[in-house]
Image 1 (cartoon, rainbow, N blue to C red):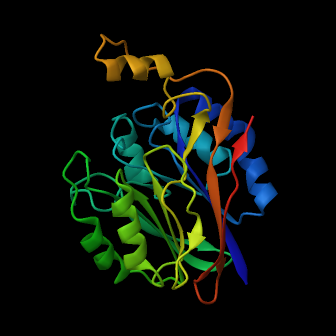
Image 2 (cartoon, one colour):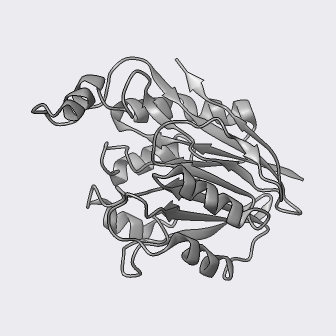
Length: 258
């Protein structure tokens, strides 16, 4: 049996939330996805509120993943404790609120979703993700295993992909908000892409107004970052998995632009 998961890039600000509300169910139907995972850590630009999480779920997501801005909105903390469908990086310190992986019941059987964060140019001093995922995989009892790697360095993501090739069904990167052109199936059967991209303003610098980013890089006095206006996009990848073997059979970009 073939089973398809749709993975949607980081939702940025109100424009990204509007795009999720308008387009997520459409894209799910269009690509025939059985399961939807959305990165929501930038729904408030820095962080996500419980109300935004509920909106993303109402729009059709099955799981929301987070990253280095997980605790940008502290009101999310009790929500994380009560909602096992929102997953923060598993290699955060063990006392951190929330969970870093979970197993979900689907028509294809149990599906494990693991969220990891990289260490290159990241704050919070997370544990080594390469060692952390090894410990997690020993506890997972599911034929389909999906991993999101929220990381800055492309080399770190690629290395993780090759380490887990043939041991998991798919791995995708998030965080840089720029889609990569390397969607493929690795030699031993794991679907892979270095970065999904983002959901939000199309004409922007990672979702933010270009003039504000330009001013920062010039060294000018800057105002608070604000998301860009105008057309929006949803960047995503769909992985088709053989539910019996857990191997990825197809990986493809399914981006939407206004």
